Length: 31
Image (cartoon, rainbow, N blue to C red; front, side):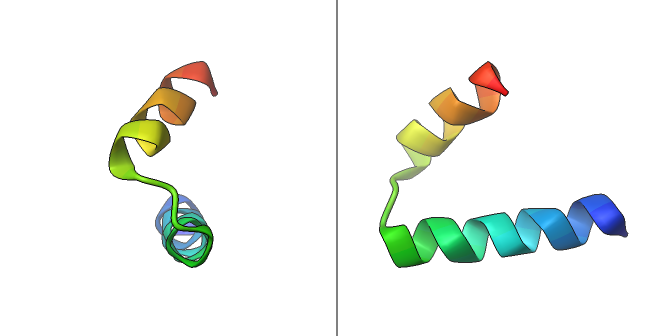
């Protein structure tokens, strides 16, 4: 549950900032 909520919050922020999915994937690999 915690992880799922964090993912939703993160994707909301990403959408507001307008980061593309390709960039998001790259960031996901780094973290």
